[in-house]
Amino acid sequence: MRRLTPYLLALPSWMWLAIFLVVPMVAMASVSLQTGNAIDGFAMTFSFSNYSDALGRYSTQLLRSLLYGGMATAAMLVIGYPVAYWIAFKGGRRKSMYLFLILLPFFVSFVLRTISWNFLLSDNGILFGTLKGWGLLPDDFHVLATAFAVVGGLTYNFLPFMILPIYVALERVDPRVVEAAQDLYATRAAAFRRVVLPLSLPGVFAGVLMTFVPATADPINAAILGGTANTMIGNIIQTEYLTNLNYPTASALSFTLMAVLLVGIFVYARALGTENVLEAAAR
Amino acid sequence: MRGTRLGDKLLHIYTWLIIVWLSSPIAVMILFGFNDKKSKSNTSWQGFTLRWYAELFDISDLTVALRNSLVIAAVSTIITVVIGTMLGLALGRHRFRGKGVTNFLVFAAISTPELVMGASLLSLFVSGNVPRDANTIIISHVLFSLSFVVVTVRARVVTLDPSLEEAARDLGATAWGTFRQVTLPSIMPGVMAGAMLSFALSVDDYVVTSFVNGSTVTFPLWIVGAVKTGIPPQVNVMGTLIFGIGVLIAIGNAVAARRRT
Image (cartoon, rainbow over all chains, first blue to last red; front, side, top):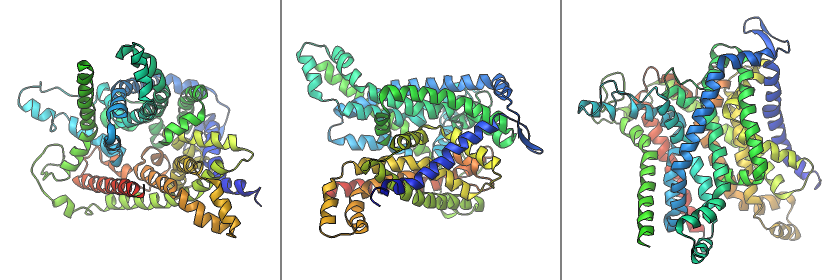
């Protein structure tokens, strides 16, 4: 009985993960090779051309998603690192308060936060409407429906996921190590570059991982802030699946997206050690 | 040394600017829940009113969507916490065959993009002719929350001293008694953290739900559907109330945790 305990404890989750994570992937792989339509049904024809067709039609959106996701991730790193650094080294007894304030947006639903940006940035809204009224901005000035709005929205929405893991890594750095470097005549910049930065790299890796994947695959920011000219791959997959009922194309696109992202993740995770990433993700 | 202090000061100000930036849409959301709007759109300030708080539940399908979200979150949280705690205990305490694969699956469930998760579940349901409704939403929410509960519970389990449980057994407690009176209370903070995380993830989810909802509408889905016609102020009020309750619970937790130590 005691020998069986771990298996019995793991069984329900195993079944859940097998039936609803592994099997669906197989189902999606299968659907991506079928042909047919929503009315007459789909049949397996091993039509690998679904992939080349889908990529031929939507490579622009796929590349745009990788570009926007990459730009947002880079922006988050540049914006977030100094915040994590300051809280970790200078936050003092108020560290938890600052972290709480950084996490505050998570108490508002993702969709609502994004819509609030739509409010704030709307062409004649409280911000630009007022500035236009004062004649400080030209009448046709707008931010909504531009690439800037989408990348900015992604940066905003996922920033805490970048700050937290970097903070966790920096918090573990012993300040005495930095002092030692300075005692050995390292300048502040050199001590940062040669001591603090390398020690924070695991946090940076985890942060990049936790932000690049969801930002690249996110359909919400492009839908709410991007107008029609900034469609990302997430929007295409949603439309093909839910509106056009074109399951094979949508599945092929999802698989391509996942392949691109997951290959990246697992190469990354291998380099880091899975436990490490999970640990960072759990905090 | 003076340069150092100036740099720290600038970084301090910078951190506050980022906090202001992060909070500004929240402020807008709260503010426009009090906007006495006359036109159809709710994007410019037209005066203060409490009307939308009084008429909070006047849009019946919005109310239904909010209720759906809360019920789905409650049910999926209960399922997730039970099976996730079990797996967390197994991973944190026991050695068994398939542990490596299990860790891999837990990691894969966290790292699969939501979009791909939703799309693959829909592929399964379409292939199997499964009708999409609240049940399929619950299935998907348990799936994406499960790993978070497993990870938080496991993190707590590995810090436990196994000799406490052995002592309980030596003193004649049954296996179940030991679990209820020794193990469970000591992993409770991890379990509660996992439960809150899983409830929050469920209430908030748009992407996965949009694939598996059928004709059942949740709060986030209703909001996205209303973007084109204009978001009614009631949505702001509901968002404000959810925000307020969440913040109160978080602060209450922090205070309780401080008292314990």
